[in-house]
Image (cartoon, rainbow, N blue to C red):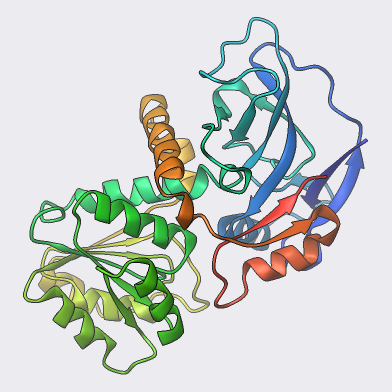
Length: 335
């Protein structure tokens, strides 16, 4: 038998996610690869999808989109990526229903794990790095980024935030990081001593951002939070600046005066890994996956693991994944 994580209705993930048993999969057909999963990450987006699920018809919906494991079989006459062979370590993304002990995935979604990448990094090798690559590309669409412009990012202590900081440093992009607490700021300064970190628990944090910019334009803000913070970020942006939203951590909606957009000619844009999966060309996806593998190899130390849980401890794992102050990604062992 095989075990899989599913849900039948929306709601709190700790309450609605459950583990079911099902028969082990048959041999893969042409175009598919059978993977024995070893671990999978719990991403915030995975849990948001569960919370927002509108259905309630009792039909189980498989959870998760990313997992790592070992190739057990390859369908006949199936072209695969370099390094994908029986016995090889791979990461699978995007694959709806990745939180399972066995995955029969489309071959194009199966990516070989570089030899230098440890298993705990392999389990989170694609979603977060691809998100960082996607956000960097969006930021650099503004002509000043990479030159005199400053990139401002909130939730900078998150897994994506740390990777993006490392990428910005490697590509000489000026960045100012924003976190919630001074404790989080101190931890991030230790990781990146050359990058300014500002904590919003201080009343004058916006002035600290302006001081860090030192007269340069704050051209782009990257924000996965939303809510009341949005107005402060827009106020910090230079005329012609862009706010790129890629999450919805805040409970309250975005509220801001229209005059701020009009008089400063600001742009608001939303980006998600879900839209990347549906809107990005196959060529661009292949390029981004290659970049993600390079990030996983070059910045292994930025792939922190907050904790690793057994599949039987699913509820505790998803509760930990949304815990304030968590550093790193929560992983679940499939066996």
